[in-house]
Image (cartoon, rainbow, N blue to C red; front, top):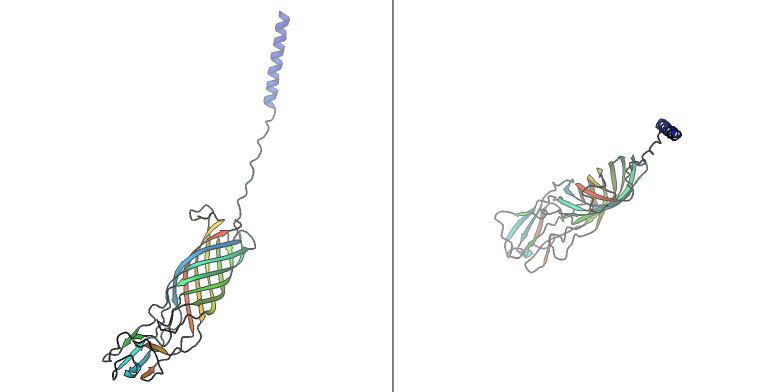
Length: 297
């Protein structure tokens, strides 16, 4: 019995000593957390979006007025009567501008660095609403009912314009400052203020230049409806110059029967001014835009 007790005491002592040694041993360290690098933003990738803003003419709008005297031979006033009409020839390249754009950017160094790109846009414009204002001299004979009067100077607005431009800028992470310039085109204005058989819908070309600033929102922005790699907001200024040629546009009215009357017709006298179309349409646009970027983060 005593031998059994002594054996049990020895075993307990050994177990206690083993547990004490185990407590003194160093514990195995937990594995370090896996490092997740924060993605560096880059502007590289395709994008598409829309914009809206305001355009206003930058050319000289103080052109000499055009004054036309007509008598009964013209068919615009009663036989034997006379009338005088004056057009102020004031440009009206001013109004709403809106449309869309697509493009591609390439950033040489992610984060901060030089960005180059190309962009094409197409814009609706609401220009030329006041282009055909005129006045009739007091005491003149009234024009016949159904007579149509048009500005012979051919001042017309635009229905649309577009550009294809290069872009060069510098990115400060998610902020991009850039300049832009390239080819511009446009058309519209409708027929010459309703002139039957005469149209100023000629396609015009020119150039555009400007600059802007663009900022990329986080990927999880509430504006990211299309789950793109980024949503960007921009503010941009653009100058557009379109050559319109110098074609003459002599017709200025239509009789009640629909016959055209020209400034060189019998009974029509061009008292002052010019019938030459304005050579250029030049205007500036200030607009804000939103883009959805697809490609690298």
